[in-house]
Length: 222
Ligand SMILES: *Cc1c(COP(=O)(O)O)cnc(C)c1O
Image (tube, rainbow, N blue to C red; front, side, top):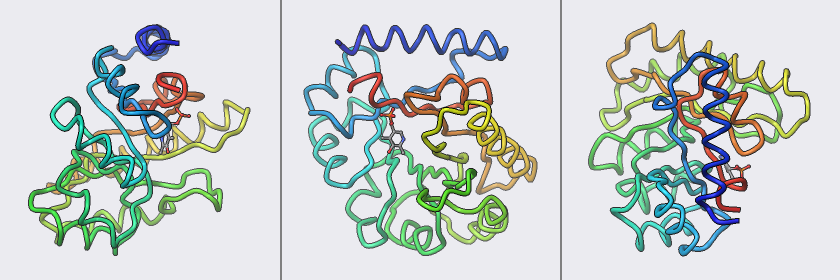
């Protein structure tokens, strides 16, 4: 299916989810996740009107970034090895996977300007998922104030692949509640207004629970 057709379907669903939850469509950013596809397919997404692209590995990111640099806003959504920070950190616009002190320290050291970061949280408690435990997040963010190149814009999570949509809803709600707690602290280094949650199979629930950034791969370009 061409990206334009896929995007229209996704936008219709976003519209319905926004209506259901009394939200504005303009408050939702679609990140087109191009990790499975070619540069040509990523370009097709840009032509269809996608202005935010997401990649989860350094190699894939650099391949697309080097070709399409100024045509998109760049989101790094995968887990990032500390030793590979220097290769990409000045090229990305958003890091969605800040999940440990050692990574924060390296980002702060290598970046030449403040980096917009989401703290990744493991709200489902699944062992295989990356991300911090919910209880760790507030003290972690408080301690980041010493790093002048770390700017916390929000929280990110990945829900498990399960069929129980009410369970998924519960995880998203938990992340939204945690975001509210941190936002209310009014930290200068961590406004924490955004919620990066929702993928191809669960973005409508995520929007109903407050997502501001949805990360869509398969149903958009796959
Ligand atoms: C691959 C990936 C996505 C997109 O997943 P789809 O199910 O293909 O929409 C979103 N977020 C992260 C972190 C991913 O790795």
